[in-house]
Amino acid sequence: MTRQPNHMDDRYVTSEKYVTLKGIHADARRHLSDVHWNYLWCGTGDEVTLRENTAAFDRHLFEAPLFTGVSNPRTDTRVLDLDLSFPAFIAPFGGGESVFHPDAHLAIGRAAKAVGISQMVPVAAFHSLEEVAAASSVASVFQMTFAGDEGAVLDMIARAKDAGYRYICVTYSPIRQWRERMMEDRFSVRGEKAPSNFGEGKSDPAMLRELLDFTQPRWTWEQAARVIAKSPLPCMIKGVMSVRDAKASIDAGAVALYVSNYGARTIDRTPTTIDVLPAVREAAGPDMPIILDSGIRRGSDIATALALGANAVALGRLIALGLAADGEYGVRRTLELLKREFWTTLGHLGCSSPAELNRDVLVQR
Ligand SMILES: Cc1cc2nc3c(=O)[nH]c(=O)nc-3n(C[C@H](O)[C@H](O)[C@H](O)COP(=O)(O)O)c2cc1C
Image (cartoon, rainbow, N blue to C red; front, side, top):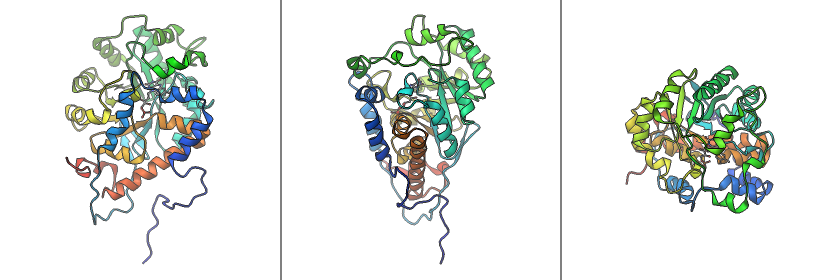
């Protein structure tokens, strides 16, 4: 009997430079200075949440069934109106991402396009939002912090729309973070090139100063709701970590929830995203799209997140590692390896598509 070829090449022997994410991690470490490595890996305080973010995934075990007959699962999915070849977005990371590679989000966008997933682009990016959009048609979500002048925020959203972005990822940042590794290193991203979204012919640099200096009173839910209602692009809200904030985000007009503790970079001793996800899903109902990040390190983590209620994950540090290891190629291989491991996980769990993942695939304890 001849076997149908799998749609995804599953041979172990390949001429690719990277065959697992470990090789990418090792090359990234070799290429980055200690100071830049610390910038990538720093959490806040004692970094309790940083450690927990990955430990939480390890606590959720799979129950792989026998004789379920799935050998070639589909990995593709649709979140909002975005088609993804597997359930992942590039997380918006900026401020100093050019230390990983000078092509930064341009290289990331090209790699994301090659693999067929969507890219979120941060307001604090090294390249302007127009440059990133021009480099890749999958730059579909623009992340911006709601702070300062409401009119200036709306102007920037309009600018993102003109450049081709489809959604806004709203973030909130009330005060500076306590990142001891960076403090010990006396490293500040301000020493790096200023983000390109501000200045001559771009957006008002006062907005950038507000992002960095936290001079004005922070926005309230009422302000956020008012701007979301006027926004020419639909908004998702990032940083939802409780039932209270899930409900408030929906009331404020969010079209999707983004469960995130920012990779433990804002405040220590918060819960992990994977631990709050089931309650957030229950509060949000079955139809509200939920994206989750913080601690995704391999393809099987994506399956765990989906089994607990997420529609897709976002990838932060993993993408920075790929970028530091080998620019666009490093990011592309990171995505290919994640997708392939996710595919393998689906098959072992007896799921023919991501939509079939639910809590039954996890060992119930
Ligand atoms: C170096 C670095 C810079 C980041 N900059 C931003 C940013 O500008 N805006 C934002 O919303 N999140 C930012 N994040 C958080 C990521 O979007 C994402 O939430 C986080 O990396 C997820 O955690 P993980 O990478 O440990 O999985 C940054 C993360 C890192 C590692």
